[in-house]
Amino acid sequence: MNWLVQTFLFVLLSLVAFAQPVIINAPADDHLEPEAGYFADFNFRHEYYPHIRNLLLKNLSQNPVARVLVLPTFAPEYVISIEKDKRWDTYFLICAEARENIFQQPAKEGIEVVVRRIQLPKDLALQLNKLFMTAIGQVSYRRNQAWGVDGTTFHFTAYNVGEGVRSGCTWSPQRGSRMHDLVQVTQLLQKMATAKENSPIAQELAVRCENLMKRISVTP
Image (cartoon, rainbow, N blue to C red):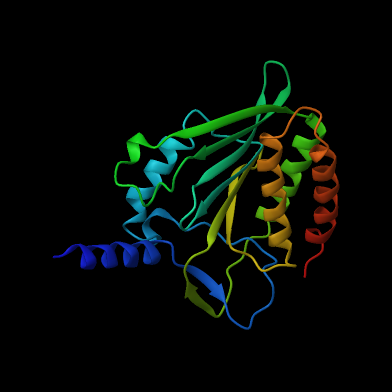
């Protein structure tokens, strides 16, 4: 098998591995979808996910206040996690980002991961927890799905005492939808993790969370 055929097969498998449902002639993405179970997902992802766990989720809490794992098709993967230090009743924003796309690299153990950690205001952390839990509480399957490639999957997770850990996901939601706004909150959190101290991003996040909370509290 020559190098051209090998390259073609690698690209083809990469596209199939990240194929996700795409809505055609359907309403905007107003809900997260249930997470696929281990036995319901593609076999080759069973090898990919452990690498994501070992590289990006290592040392993170099993009960996050709010967390989003971002898996682009070709760009580097990253996770945003908001966690509580129970000893001091303080909250932290942690961003762990791979330097290169984990799925496409054969030597995954050598991939560098950059971790940033900043303290987060308690009221903002609790606001994000409420937003994530509300969105996850509305998970539903979509109908009339086709398949698409070259997008980004967002896995949202949150924990509350008495409710446990809950999760839901979305794939490249349409602009103007509620899930697109939720993704924008994620992107602001990533930006905040790399911003200078006393950044105004916290205020912008609080406003966005409040506005989105009003939107997702109303059943479309």
